[in-house]
Length: 175
Image (cartoon, rainbow, N blue to C red; front, side, top):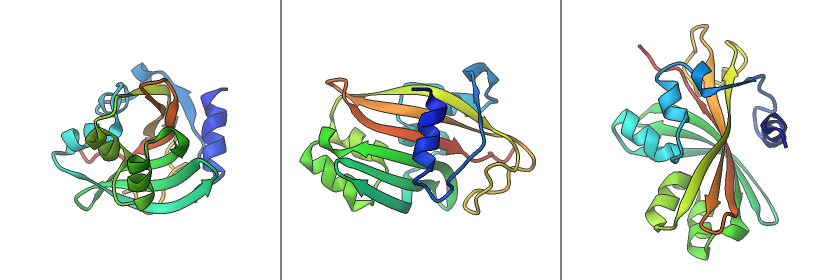
């Protein structure tokens, strides 16, 4: 399935409902966003390293349907929002202790997975560019007429089962 359709499917359950974006190759992503998005690591630890501190979670909305759990979140470094995330977790592919931590809604998924010691892989499916004014939620600072960047990512467990599918959008960094 085209990742554009997957993003549209996820957004249908979000507070935002719709975000107009264009797929972009990694070379089309400006610095520092390319380094923050184009890698095979989780975003939580990548953002913690970039911002020099622990990443906190604010859950905006959740929905659960059988073994799938969707949560819409903002990740923060201190008071600064550093990512909008829309995460679909396949709970049936998670150990019970991980499931409990995920459903407690107190920690970013990346922290939970990294603390657990399980082997997992992060495989970005595609990258996106959002035109100025197309995504300007009140939890992000104004983009100042600049585009935003994001990625659609999939996390797999050691048996190559999907743990989660994630839409990740970064705010503009102040120069």
